[in-house]
Length: 256
Image (tube, rainbow, N blue to C red; front, side, top):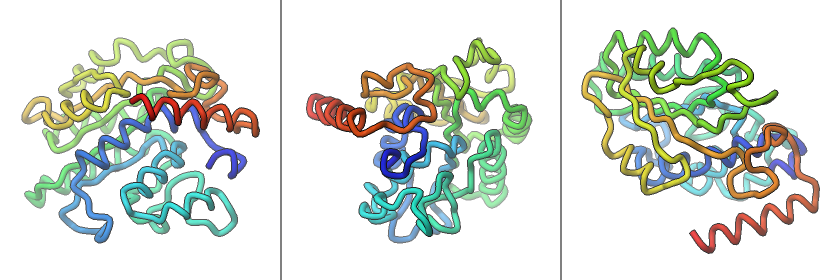
């Protein structure tokens, strides 16, 4: 998709892919035939630049035709660089400007509490995105309102657009920071689908507190020349790189 579209964020798409697959095929109570079901769980991709990974997941889950993926970033396509809830079934919020997803998710989770509704809210953030102060304002509010129906998942691949997170504005000790804001925290391998499923099945981590799942991931997961390489945050593979990437991903899938 990124190769055909001529722009995109393949590193972060691949670091989030296992998380998205686990959520949509094991965790989220959603119905592709009724994407606006008022009782559905809500998922918000705060790191909206990973839209290609979200669109691929929505297509596999039946929200949009798989054939639509070929139109990624083409003129008049519904598949923009950042997801648009007015165009794509299954998208809950327009995201892309970083630091917006968690505040929206807090509002959704609070609405569910006020309505005494059973649906849950999940939000996936990038780790570099946590350098935005709006996230921590939202984190304080979530704790204040005891939103144990809210889960934030941090894609902890340790790389952002310009450099490593810890050389930009360091986040560690990240788990302790979330705990200091009143959240219950668990850390997990973000590429171990069984471990992710067990973690999500055990939510909330602690009744009365919002949950933070720190998913330890690898930028560019599954493609040798992309893995842990900062430059693949925002880069388009050429023809030879695309062919190699597809071979490696196919081989990885065959042995998974």
